[in-house]
Structures are given as structure tokens and as C-alpha cells.
Amino acid sequence: MDWKRNYHTHTDFCDGQNTPEEMAEAAAKKGFTALGFSGHSYTDFDTFYCMTPETFPEYCRQVRALREKYEGQMEILLGVERDFYSDLDCRDLDYSIGSVHYIRWEGEYIPVDESEEVVRKTIEKFGNDPYAYAETYFDTVARVVEQTGCDFIGHFDLIKKFNRNGTVLVDEHHPRYVTAWKKALERLVPQGRPFEINITPLSWREDGECYPSREILKEICRLGGRITISSDAHSVDHLNRGFDQALAIAKEAGFRTVTVFHGGGVTEEIPIE
Ligand SMILES: [Zn+2]
Ligand SMILES: [Zn+2]
Image (cartoon, rainbow, N blue to C red; front, top):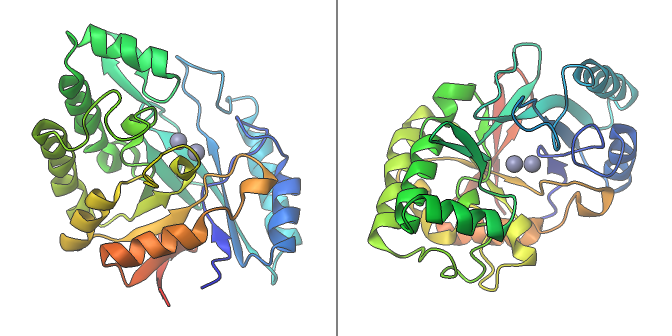
């Protein structure tokens, strides 16, 4: 199955490398039928990677212009990747991704995806209990739909980013880790928003896991949840990487369809061939 859509796309308005125009042009060349832009929404406590109140209107203007340019050829959607701790008004956008990139701990916003060193220091702050850290992370993720009103859930288990083979920083099969993500799923799945299969870990995980891991995907499927697939592209080269693996993983986990988005809360289920 040739997957020709992506709804998790970054540009040079945030931490991506290419302009919206370059991303759209590359997607059109690859024969995409839909491209959703999802620049990082503003977080005032960390401005390095995100759009700002000053740059956001121009991002919206450029993406809307591309929507007109490609009308009838490729569906362009204007969205954001909304961090849990960003308070952006998303009403005028076509969709948003709800993502947890930080935990709030003792008055601080601590990134979970910055570096292995930051994660090690964070675990120290949790009294060297990596499971207490994981519980705080998944407790936050559990509330991401309520907090952001998102259309789909970004990289559900981002906390494992530097956990190269599943055991370096935290044992992903430890009962406390498993209980933490299961509790989050119990709250999120009934809310009906799809979870993305985000393929970015494929390039460094030794066990070929994506976000979420296979075991988590099977549980989402068992509970009746939905999925979409994302390349989380930060450059034109990465627009459609990993889609074949993502579809194979989805199928193996038991899913029969993948959700696609048309803006304004309208979704469609595409059967996995
Ligand atoms: Zn993200
Ligand atoms: Zn992203």
C-alpha cells in the first residue's frame, strides 16, 4: 500500500529545515494527496524550537496560500503540534496534534525529549526512580485530549526516546511502566482521538519500535482505539519515510484502518490493504 499523506510536518517556522512551500512542492512531487502542516505551538518557557506569537500569523498565511495553490491536486491542512503546556487558541485551524514534550515537576518544565543527559538528571530528581518519572509523564499524557482538544495524539510514549533498546534508562516491561501507560490508555481511548504511529524512532531503536511500541498498539486496538501514521517530517527527505513499516506494524497490532483528516473535526477511515 502506497501511503501518500502526512499530518505531522514541521517547517523552518519552528525546528524544521525547509519552508512550507518547499515541503508542499516535495510532497506534490511524491504524489501526496494530502499534507498537513503542524508547526510547534508557542511555549513561553522554552522558545528555541517553536513558533512565536510574532511568526505564527505568517505561518498561517503561507499555509493558507499553499492550500489555494494546490487546490484540486493535494489537500493542504493548516494545523499545529500543540504542546500540553501551550495555551494557543486553535479554533481557526484545521486540526491540532496534542503532544507532551515536558513534564511539570517542582515548578519546573522539564523536557523529556531533549537529551539523554537531561533524562538522567531528571531521573535523579525523582530519587533515582525512573518509574516515578514515567508515571508523571503518562499521567500528563492521559490528560492531553482534555487539555489541548487535539484531533490526534502525538508520540504517546515519547519518554522512551533515549531508551535505545528498551532498557537503558527504564525497563519498558517493568510492571510499573506498563501500568502507567495502561492507565493513560484507559482514559484516552474512550475519548475517541486517534493515536499516531510516529516512525521517527525507527532510525535509532535497535528493536524497530515506533511510538507507540507494538505492545501499546495492541492494547489500543484491543480497547477499540484508532490510529493514524506520521513521519514527523522536519525536512523534505523525511516526508514519507517509514510508512511501509508503520502500516506493517499497524496491521500486526490488529488494526484494519488508518484515520485521515479533512479539517474541522472531519475524519475518514482508510482500509489497510
Ligand atoms: Zn513532538
Ligand atoms: Zn513533531
